[in-house]
Image (cartoon, rainbow, N blue to C red):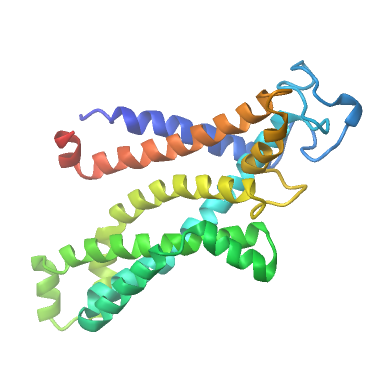
Length: 272
């Protein structure tokens, strides 16, 4: 029995902690994450407030838990949305080939020219800053990534003997894509989705930091960092806590995706 890679185990533990915290926040937090208590601002850690309170008297632990839920939700929706559209385009390009494949790949190249931040600024200018616009911006930058992964993986499958036999038997390209191509590229897509999950969490934090993501009173690690930057000399821990959460989440999903890649393709692990 082959042992699981260390990066997979570490990543799985970190991801489990983050997902568990986000799930727990749906039903319980030590305090209301949005409740203000000006008289109790900058309270030290205690049995009542485990990590203390911020400049508005809000419980830091409750904010971190609520922010984990928001970050995971944004990342999940953005990756699912961007991944679904990107995989569909990638499969279409691989199945039809020719000018369709060239057109899809050029559109993917064009998508890479618009970072999430720029797209979010455009959406905010038209519709105003919101978490929904942040999701759309992050999903948009995921589409070309998944399109390239799906197309490259599908092109390899189209040359396999069983696919050639299916074509000889008269199966349509749509049927072959559904029955043979998609199931065989699922592992590569899942690995890429895990990695993009980390990117999405980081992008959401960056957009919220700039005021383009979660809006008050919603909690966000990025917005907590933004609010703490003017208090860095007075209460540096207000920036440390959300920063550590972002690092742990991004590192966890990054290591998990890297470990899944080693498991699904052991040749990569041997090269390392």
